[in-house]
Image (cartoon, rainbow, N blue to C red; front, side):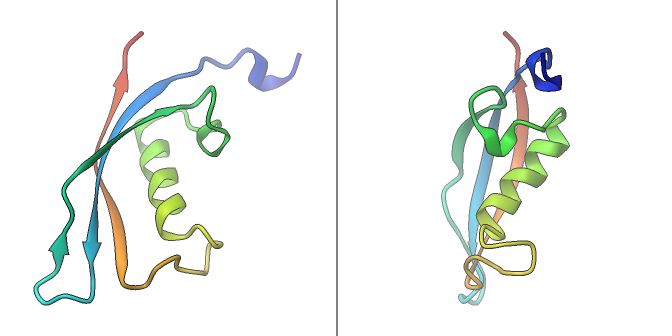
Length: 87
């Protein structure tokens, strides 16, 4: 049995917005809600807290091409809320 075989999987609701950095003043998208499941989404498999999910979510959308490569310099995704969904 591997380490992840016994790890509890969790679900989280993430609320995030996009910020258009090219507009003055900045423009904000409508909030989007996404459900993250650490048991089925390998990008979030190592997350064990709401902070882990927030950091991983923003990294996915803002630095998807690597830690030193911004995916889209004209937009930034910001997480507003992460809530664990109780089973």
